Each structure stands twice: as structure tokens, then as C-alpha cells.
Amino acid sequence: MNNFGYTRASDVADAVRQMAGDPAAKFIAGGTNLIDLMKENVARPSRLIDITHLPLDKTEQSRDGGLRIGALVPNSDLAYHPQIAARYPLLASAILAGASQQLRNMASTGGNLLQRTRCCYFYDTTTPCNKREPGSGCSAIGGINRMHAILGTSEHCIATHPSDMCVALAALEARVLATGKSGERSIAFADFHRLPGDTPQVDSNLRADEIITAIELPPKGFAENYTYLKVRDRQSYAFALVSVAVGLDIEDGTIKEARLALGGVAPKPWRDREAEAQLEGARPTRENFLLAAETVLRDAHGFGHNDFKIELARRCIQRALAQAAHGTPQSQADKRIR
Ligand SMILES: Cc1cc2nc3c(=O)[nH]c(=O)nc-3n(C[C@H](O)[C@H](O)[C@H](O)COP(=O)(O)OP(=O)(O)OC[C@H]3O[C@@H](n4cnc5c(N)ncnc54)[C@H](O)[C@@H]3O)c2cc1C
Ligand code: SF4
Image (cartoon, rainbow, N blue to C red; front, side, top):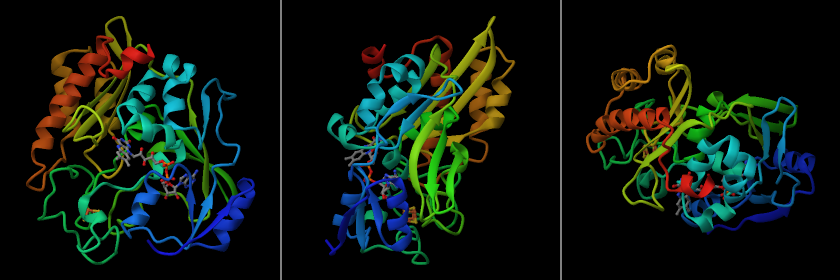
């Protein structure tokens, strides 16, 4: 472990001021990802700016009837919050499908968005990795890439974004509130994470001096017809091979509105508006679900070990849509939150 400084931010303005004054510093919240990266010598911050004492730990009603979730709300508190369980069970279900209870107790909402990829080469400092060391090459292309992406990749990086929570937030059209030197701004969830292109080292569009203060959920939560389906190597404590978040609004046997986002298949939560538009106005049938899956996967390609993900994703999309349409959500967690 490298030497690093430690300071505590007294308020949001102080956090921004401290970060602007030391661009090699990092905010620390739950520490469940950052400390691991520091131990592996992947992250080498000059200083940790502890934000855990900032007043960002509330989940409150927002003016438009949605919810505002503070960046420091622990993942477990969020999953079991009565408003989330009742109005946004898709989000609760996705959170409870991730990590372990102990980790969820520590992990924060803001930190979950900025957790880094689980690509094994990213963690292995003896191997080339463009995300860790720009310009060094990508060991996963032509290497062991069973967990890697089939959509949104570039010749520089094929890593996936590991979060479950973010897949549900993408489907729900959440917004990210951030504060920096130039004030507060609100970022649409679809614009928050980045595809690798030729800058795979940059995961998000958050500016260097900005702190995430909250996530905003719109009023509509798709609480009747939803599913978070996660397929993984073990039933718990494993990252997704493929996951699918679905929210449907069905009226008189026709899909009025559809939301569909995938995890485990791309460098960011993968939402496909063309597939959603195709479902809207259609009947919730097996054939229409298959057409939507084909649309989502039209540009998918594998890298050898992960070729199986294309067929797996096709089946998961169909199954998740069918479960949502029938009002039979997937996760064991749903039994606890309903
Ligand atoms: C063994 C293991 C298994 C896991 N399995 C899963 C899984 O299945 N699914 C899943 O989704 N996740 C999983 N996780 C990841 C876990 O959810 C994340 O580590 C956690 O959400 C990160 O939150 P944190 O508060 O601990 O972040 P930290 O580690 O404190 O920070 C992570 C990053 O976010 C930055 N940051 C934190 N808060 C802010 C803020 N408010 N503003 C700006 N920057 C900020 C930090 O500087 C750092 O770069 C797993 C983790 C482990 C260790
Ligand atoms: S896939 Fe991305 S994170 Fe993994 S080795 Fe290649 S560049 Fe690094």
C-alpha cells in the first residue's frame, strides 16, 4: 500500500474545495471498492477525503413526487426503505441481487455508481490494461474474457460495468445530482457512464472536482410489472454474467410503456430505446419479446470465451419481459420486500 493523506470534509462545499486543491485525491465513502483497489496498487490517491460525515444520508420525497436519495444512503437501507420497496421494487430487487449483506451495509449509493470494473487484468498490475495504464494494451482481447462485454466495446477495452443497482437506475430514468466548482448540475443516468472508445480510463462524465450528492427517481416506478433477472455463476455474492431490468406499463393487454436495461454485457448499463419503442403498442407475447431481444443484440459480438453471453442475453431478455408482464418478479429478494 502506498502512503496517502487523510482529511475529513466538513460540508459539500469543503469537499469540492479540497478536491479542487488536490486532483490526485479521492473521495472515500463505504470504501468497499476503493480500499481494495488501493491494496492492489491499482488506485494510488495522494489523499482520501472522507465524506462519510456529510449530511447526504436521507431518502426524501422530491417536489415532482419522485424520490431524492442522498449519495451516502447505504445500499441496504435503500433496498429496505418502505418507499423504495413499495414504489420502486425493481431498484430494491437489483440492489439485493448484488454483493453480500455485509457489503451492502457499507456500500453507498454514490460509490456504487463509481465502482470500477471487475476485469481480472485491471486488478493484475503485471499485465497490460488500457483502463489502468492508458496505451499499454488490453489483455482481455485475446485473453480470458468470459466475463467481458458483448456490446459497446472498443478496440481499447471490453470490460463490463459491474453494478446491479445502476441497471435498475438506468431503466427507471434516474438522474444524478453533482456539485463542483461551477455549482450543482443534474445528469441524466444515460449520460453518466461512458463507453470506452479511445479513453477507457475514464468511466463517467463526472468532472474531476465534482461530488455526487444525490440520485433522483422520477415518480413512475413500474411497481406492478417489473423484474430484475440476474444470471451468475453462484446464486449469491457473484457479479452478473447477464442481468436484465424490466419495467412495463400494460393497459388492456397492450404495452403502453416499456423500460429495458441490461447489466453484465457492456461497459455501462445498457438501455436500448429502439427495443423499448418496438414493445410499446405491442401485445406482451413471446414473439414480441423475442423481436425486442433481437433488436437489443443486433450489434452484439463476442471475443471467444464470452460468445455464450449473446444467446444467454437473448433468453434472459425474453424471460425477464415475460416475468414482468405476468407480474411475477424474479429475485428471492422480492419475497422479502413485498
Ligand atoms: C466481494 C465484492 C462483491 C461485490 N458484488 C457486487 C455485485 O454483485 N453487484 C454490485 O452491484 N456490486 C457489487 N460489489 C460492489 C459494491 O457494490 C461496491 O463496492 C460499492 O457499491 C461501492 O460503494 P462504496 O461506498 O463502498 O464506494 P467507495 O469504495 O468508497 O468508492 C468507490 C468510488 O466512488 C468514489 N465516490 C464514492 N462516493 C462518491 C461521491 N458521493 N461522489 C463522488 N465520488 C464518490 C470514490 O472516490 C471511489 O472512486 C461487490 C463488492 C465486493 C468487494
Ligand atoms: S478489458 Fe479494459 S479493463 Fe480489462 S484489460 Fe482490457 S483495457 Fe483493461
